[in-house]
Length: 102
Image (cartoon, rainbow, N blue to C red; front, side, top):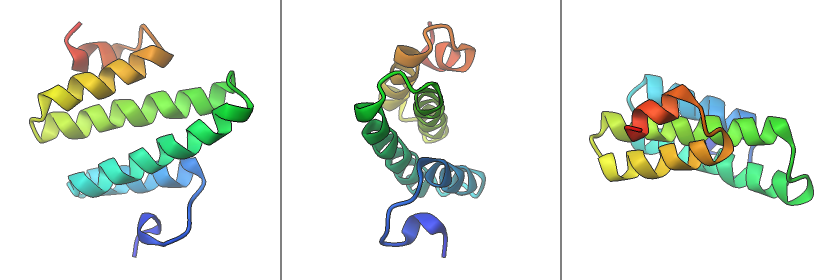
């Protein structure tokens, strides 16, 4: 069983790693769930430290990865949503710009 399917919460990097494993195995719903869990955990870190560069980078990466999943599933509305969220953290991120079509 992957770590994301356990009942306890994971550190955000572990949730992202699970998302990456699911993405590689083309388990798209599970990938989005893992990346979403990572983003939720990062948000709790940012409440205490809003300028935490590592947390912000992880949030940007997870949103970018969710945009990649949604590209694969042809859910282009969500591609734009997740790519835009990534760009809120890093306005010049080339992958997010490409996925959003900017």
